[in-house]
Amino acid sequence: MIETENKRPTLRDIARLANVSLATVSRAFAKPDDVSPQTRDRIIAVANDVGYQFNQLAVDFRRGSTRTIVVLVSNISNAFFADFFKGAEEEARANDYIVLMGDTEGGPRSADKYFDMIRRGRADGLILNVGYYENVASAIGLKLVSCNPFPEADLPLVTIDFAKGGGLAAECLLAHGHRRIAQVCGPLGASGIAQRHKGFNDALKAAGVTADDSLILSDNLSMEYGMRAALAIIGMDPMPTAVFAHNDEVALGVLHGLAKSGVQVPKTISVVGFDDMQYSAAVTPSLTTVRLPRRAWGRSACRALLNIIENGEAQPTQTIIEPELIVRDSVAHAP
Image (cartoon, rainbow, N blue to C red; front, top):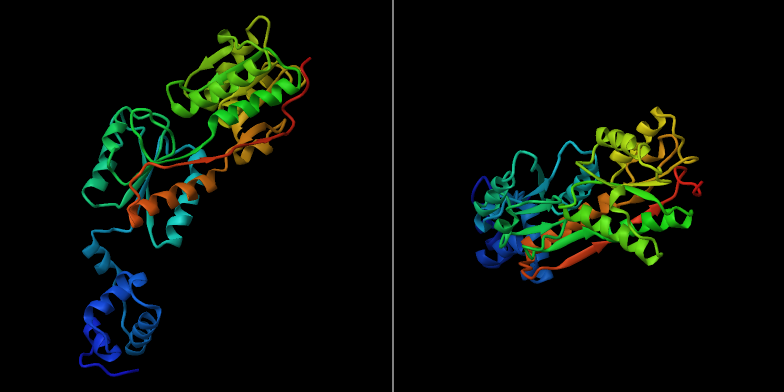
């Protein structure tokens, strides 16, 4: 090991031994692309020889960076977001960032404190994966990527083609001869829900089938709601021959509610879900559903945010991720 003037080597020692300026050594560590490869390699070799430990935290502090991002979701207890968060965390970790997760269920302005974290420099940026947020305009100008479109705020967007997903569900049921189809929706004011509802209805219209508003049930998507929806569907006269549930959790409730009432799936009524959660293949009958590539979605959203943070990308951009129909056992030809 090369001896230095001090017991603990400094950037000044490295500059002297590498025969470069102190500013060049600082750039080699903080902005390596700004230094020629030959000079950078010489500086790193000297640093290794003297046992210098690079202090990334100090560099980030001088830059005003925390190397921390926030992923904000609408319900942290919903298993749907676990894969999304995992994808975002994988991408962040690969780029030496850490991820915090927040929840907007606490109230109508519960995201504001996370927006303030960005404004105050306590985190570098934020991924917003919520279907509806009444104060989203307050996020304009922040380093942020949204996972749902908000007409009132032109934000960088990385999202799923929810309308196509709704269309895939409709096309599957139409191909099996179903024409009287119930929809078990979430709140139609939420953009992702509204889009899958529209995509489904557009596919019906394209096939010459008129959407019947009396067959639409709307509430917060949950297994409990799915069970209640099943009873409402059984009570319809005539009963629909198929159901499109707007997520797999509510679809599971529909399946359970129908089974408890003695209604056979898919012999009497078919069911299509949305999301392709892990349990969807394990229920009986296994659930035909629209797969959302949640982990890839999280990685893509994080990649877009890091581009904004590190490269100053200012113009709103859009990345649209394609869903996929997964055919299993819960759909049969209309009776």
